[in-house]
Image 1 (cartoon, chains in turn yellow, orange):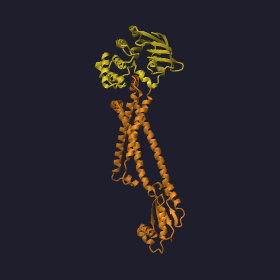
Image 2 (cartoon, chains in turn yellow, purple):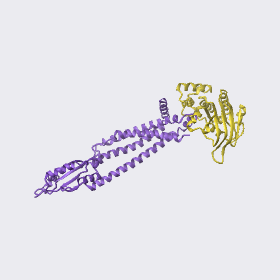
Image 3 (cartoon, chains in turn brown, cyan):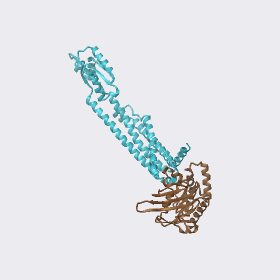
Image 4 (tube, rainbow over the protein chains, first blue to last red):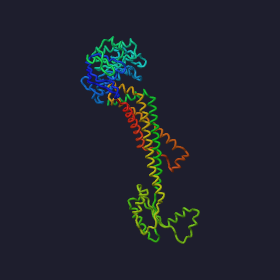
Length: 221
Length: 296
């Protein structure tokens, strides 16, 4: 469960990126965050995985106030949250399998268990046949599926995605959304920031709309 | 233990994957440590030369004529028992003349037929090692005190004064040069390692995003830095050994003649150990510092 109480974020004194945001995303929800460029969508996601700290307000994730979480404990939060970006953030010096395995290596999991889980996750997303390939040789849609596999392989309870279809064509975008719907159907809370309104309309899920750092609609489910 | 082994494995993979930049880092570390080691090698050998100069510090006590030899031997005993004195040698008037004649060689006739021996008897005192300097000699002079037998004392005051100043200058110069070289090495090495860390900043970012602890992220970098430092240090020692072999086996050896040395010494084990350890510490710390700068 994600709860925000009166959250504000100021990068510069005059320009607030987010203002007095109150939000409630229950466990298992699927929500889009929409709004024009500069509305605060990415900032909101960054606050949720503690890449940024709020200037004011409290953010509770599963009841834990991450606004006050010490830096040394942030890794425990990140293990509960899978994150997907528009630019995939895959390592070119590792193959597909090794990119996904990274999320389990940091947990200190035995190699055999890592291999089993990565294989199952790649199979689920239909890219197991490319597991020895360099990610740079894959199409955009395939790269995004590898990124989702990495974000999901350690079975986090929340999946955050920042413009995940940004560089993809309509067909690839639709497939990625189907993957998100599948992830959500398995019980994971999914939050997707996008300005692709066509996708939002097609999916028919909850929409949290931001403008100029303020919540316009969809604050409560 | 498992974590360390896994970190060593990851460090080895990283070194293999980025072999070019790792080789450059190792090369730069070895050049820096070669310069520091070369400096140590030169000062170590020069120290031997200067120590040999110190061995030549000698106090000559000239004695008045007319005193019985028993009195002289008593004075010799007294001076020998001084804690600062290593040895006292007695040269009688006759022996002094004989030695002077030997020194004159073909011109020996100059002193033949003298109605009396003009050379005084003397005692040559060698100070113990810590007193082979101006201050030490002054301590011994004070201990000799006023003695009716003593006519004059000579110890090459000007020479000793200059030797003292030279030692001070060398000590100070060695310290400044050594510190400057070491600091330059630290600066260059840490910046080189920074480049390797910068090249992997995406990996650092992703590891943090998937929930890696700082320890998990830093340990392979630390291991990698230590391995690079060790490799650089071993190469620098190899290079120093090569240069040492080349210089010391040259047939004409003008350098040895100039320095009045029988042979050039290589670095002692402690200095080699210090270079190896220094390389490992520099590599490890340089890595950690660079990773730290890319922290959240």
